[in-house]
Amino acid sequence: MESKTPLYECHLRAGGKMVAFAGYLLPVQYAGGGVIAEHNAVRKAAGLFDVSHMGEFILSGKDGLVNLQLLLTNDYSNLADGFVRYSPMCYENGGVVDDLLVYKLKDNQYLIVVNASNRAKDYQWIKDHLSGDAKLNDVSDQIAQLALQGPMSISIMQKLVAAADIPQTNYSFKPKVKVGNIECLLSRTGYTGEDGFELYCSAADAPFLWDMLLQAGEQFGLRPCGLGARDTLRLEAAMPLYGHEIDADISPLEAGLGYFVNLDKADFIGKQALIEANPPPRCRVGLKMIDKGIAREGCFVYAQDRTIGHICSGTMFPYLGYAGATALVDRAYKPIGSLVIVDVRGRKLQAEVIKTPFYKRQK
Amino acid sequence: MSKIKEGIFYTDSHEWVEYIDDIAVIGLSDYAQEELGDVVFVNLPEIGDKISAGEAFCDVESVKAVSDIIAPISGEVTEINDELADNPEMLNSDCYSAWICRVGKITGEGKLMDAKVYGKFLVEQE
Image (cartoon, rainbow over all chains, first blue to last red; front, side, top):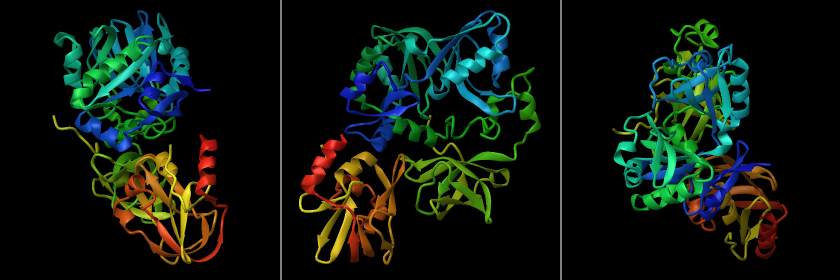
């Protein structure tokens, strides 16, 4: 039986087509919208997403930082209060447990945001590896999360929040901000490739925040967006999704996330395995379909009649207007312009390796 | 509520079929296009393909997924709607005009419903 997020009734009112996802009933798209319209609203105006299914943990205790450093591949020693940092979390063998965001609330107090589908596994993994004075609390059920994304997000936020309370730089946040009359953690982050905000509030306040944002955003073309657009937006921006670009048997180095793996750090779980397999024999590339058709997750990729990898995610990019995919392939095919063949349900379609991200916003 | 066109037949997998003399025209119902969402690609059959009632003969891709189109009848493809190759969204905007293919040399048909029975079937589906 799926759970409902605090915004379930809001979605029904907005004509959300509800589907089961990671244990929750969430809208895949809304009536009068559709994935393409919602996707393009985020690229050109703004979109509002319910991401309350995400898991939130609080890590505290005077050994909090020491534990983070051991659990995560990125370096948190120089993370300042009010800033956010992304990291993979690895197994000993270098495979990925999950990818997550860490918010530094204050010294040795961190908010960790994880994928909904991995929440229970992550909680257990972190708990099993804690040492010294460190405590982990799963606060997911008390917290709702909304994502306001797109170029008009800032204009909408300016209507509701005092200028000094708006986080100015990417990957920064303000821990206690009044959005209208609702207290939120306001974060300049997102998963769409656009400027935008992620807002964390109490579950009880969430429906009021949702309605307030939609109302404030109406004049700017804001529309509610479902899981469908969330996936096509992140893929156009070539952002990884657990279970696709990264997984228990795909390392962050293979997935092209080396920037978030600090091999110079004293020690962390998975470090030895990652060093031994560096550079990895396979790597993530972006593909643009040359032949008509859409490569989908799991399709095999060939070159010179040899299997060289598989598709991680693929779709028709709604904003860019062509079919593309991410693939994990033999690193010989990493160079831009490499030609490969994708087997799409028995049809052999030609594709070309192109630069990622497919979509990059103009600043 | 999905739109249902009178005078044509439907399958339980939501294809429609219209008989014009000895030719059958095949497309997707309004319910099907709503379920699919934005259609972005149609992998059309080829002229001369032999299709069998109840078996997949082509597929359509929406933004999110690929779906088989099941043949409502058995026969041979005589014509395909090339326009769908460049404008797959016609399956969403006007599903009862956006035919996929025409089939001749009909040798059999699967379980088909008329508009009234299909309407009841949809109500039971909800």
